Amino acid sequence: MELTIAQKLEALLKLQQIDSQLDEIKKIRGDLPEEVRDLEDDIAGFETRINKFNNDIQSLEDEIDRNKTTKKDAEKLINKYKDQQMNVRNNREYDAISKEIELQTLEIELADKKINEATFKIRSKQEEIKATQGALDERKADLKAKMQELDQITAESEEDEKKLITERDQQATHIEERLLKSYNKIRNNALNGLAVVMVKRGACGGCFNVVPPQRQADIRDKKKIIVCEHCGRVFADVEGVPEPAPTGRR
Image (spheres, rainbow, N blue to C red):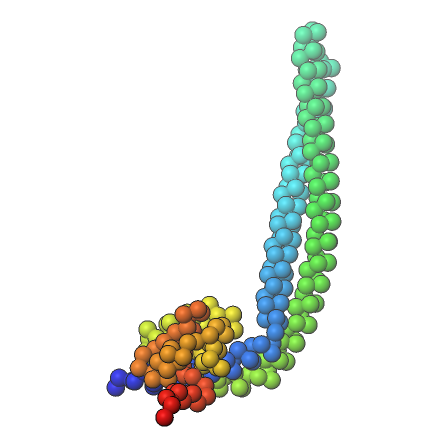
């Protein structure tokens, strides 16, 4: 059965009233849900940073192990070359072995340098982990407190909210899909969540711009859906009794 314009407007107004009640419940929670999300994001960021630092430390420790191995290999070669030096037959062989010993000595010095640099970086990373862990612990404590506060507020209004959500779902079935989409779009763009308003004291109940008398008469007639030319909100009706038309003199 095709609904009249008046019935469509009435259905939209009822939906708006339910949504406004849900908005009031959410308003009681204030910024708590957003604060909780922000804290959760901070915690995830800190945990990611700590994991990265730990991975960096592991890589540095692997680098230290490689350089220690390089150093041991070089020391073995030096001992080997020194033994060979004792049995050289001429100066040329002695100089060649001395050159190899010198190269391996440089390898040891380079390995020591890299080990020291990596050790310094590990200490720096550990300090950063300590500082980040401190910030993480603070955020976790804040989150716990905010969650407890939010849970308490949510519990107080949970039954009412569930009831209203059920009513909203039922009411939405009485509105055609195209109109419902337009309603949701207007509502999402409105700061106060109002998509359907009354004309109050000659002005739009959403943006408070003046609505001309002739337009008010059209809104009262409910022959078509009329929206505010300033904010795009749907006019459900005009509050109050219309002023009588002026009569001429006798």
